[in-house]
Image (cartoon, rainbow, N blue to C red; front, side, top):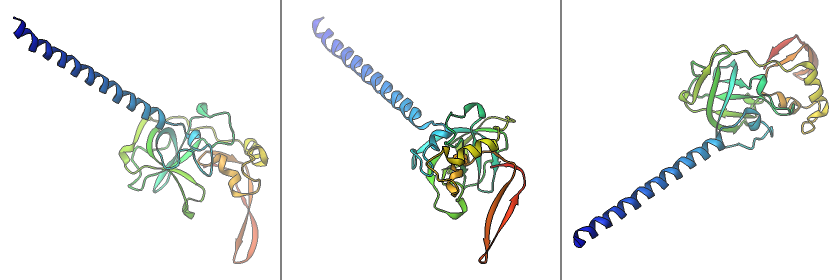
Length: 212
């Protein structure tokens, strides 16, 4: 009896050790998945907090927003107004660049979740979008809900307050002073812009618009 029990006892021990190792490995992998998810799911204003740079530059992130405009090679998303942070100097919107084609679910007022790489633009065609999310596949964009209320356009009073010096990182009168509102809906009752053509200058009035 003793000779028969010893190998059996050893087998049980080996089996118990094997179960413990597998259990530990599963817990470790699950913890790593949760950690990665916690590190890469970020709010739009967290991506845009350091314009014209970003603390997430070069990283793959997942973020959510409401589609506010659709272009030929991408679309803009913006946080719902209820999710705005208290810092007027951080943008609540961002451009999603989709070189493989704009997904069919990128429809105005849809709430979408996007996964892509945070990149900085050096192209003149993206002069107004220094930081954007490059999403290489349409499968990286999913719909959360449809027919949402669009975020409230930033008021002219807020624009004036911010561009008059509250956002001290951006000098008043420069192009960069508008960065806090990059990718957002804004309400501009009227404005003047100086344009130079073939060495001559002039001003033009922009009529009331609510747009990005």
